[in-house]
Length: 366
Image (cartoon, rainbow, N blue to C red; front, side):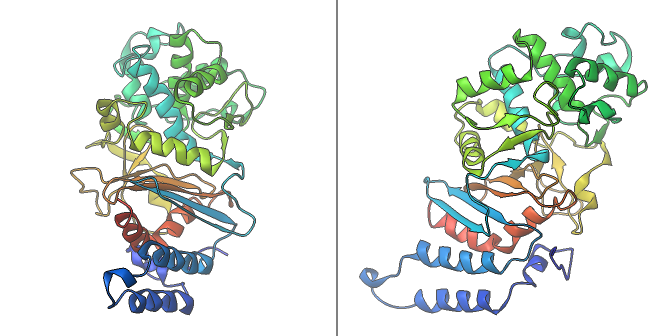
C-alpha cells in the first residue's frame, strides 16, 4: 500500500500514518533520558536507534526497503523491512544520475573533459552552428541543454549507443537556447556519456565506468546494464547494492575523488532563473520545489525555491530508491528499494518519517 498523506504541504504530514508504537518509542526515549548522573546516562545513540527501528517498522510502503545511513564520524545505522538487505541488487532508475555525473566530473578533474566543452568537440555528427553547437557539458549535466525529446532507442537493448545519440539529435531539430530551460530527461547524460567515451579514448561506457572504478575503488559490484551493457541508459540503467552506494556517498561527502571546486559546482543550483519545463518532483503527491545541480537535486524546503545555499542533495529514482547527502546535519544515506515505477516519492517519504530522529542521531555522532 502507498503512503497515506493527510497534508501534502509539509514534511510532518508523512508521519500521520505512524501508529501508537512510534509514540511509545518516543515516550521511552524521553523518560530514559531524564535525570541520573553522568555515569548512569543511557546510550543515547542506542536509544535513538531503537526509536528509529520502531518507526521504520510502522511505515507502510509498496515494497520492502533498507535504510542505510552514515554519520560524520563513520557510525552507521541500518534497518531493513522484509526481505530487503544492504546487499540486495536493485535497479537504479534515476539514482544513477548522481553516479553518471560523478564519473564524468572525474574526467573533468583529470583534464580529459571540460565543463565548457561542446558535443561537436568530440562528436563528428554534431552541428557546429546554432543552439545545438552552443550546448556545453555543464548544460548536459544540469539538464538545461534543450534536448527534451527522448527517442525510443534509449530503451532498446539492441540499439547502438552512438547511433542512439544521433537519434537524440534528430529528435530535437529545434531547441531552446542552452541554459534557459530545465527538462528532466535521459537525453542529456546520454550525449555527455558519448562525449566522455570519445574524450577518454575508451571503447564504450562500460570501459569508462571500469576506469572510474579503478580510480576510486567504488562500485565493485555495480553495472550499467539496462536496457543492455552495450546500450546503457546513463540516466537510469544501473544495478547497485546499498553498501556500495553508501560508500560512493561517503567518498563525495568526504571529498575523496572530486575537488572542492567541482563538488561545489555539482551541489550548486544550476537552474537559477531557467524555466522548469518538466520536473518529476512537481508530479509527486507532496508539494516540493527543488532545483538541480550536476546530476542531483538541490533540495529546498521553501516553495517556491528560495535557498541561497545548499544544505541537502539527492537523486531519487522512479522505483522509490532515495540516496541523499545532508550537509546541514552531517550525514548521508540511501533508502534502497525497488517498488512500482510510479513510486519515486516513497523513498523520500520513508526518510521524512524519521527525519528528526536521524538528525538527532547524526548530531550525536559528529
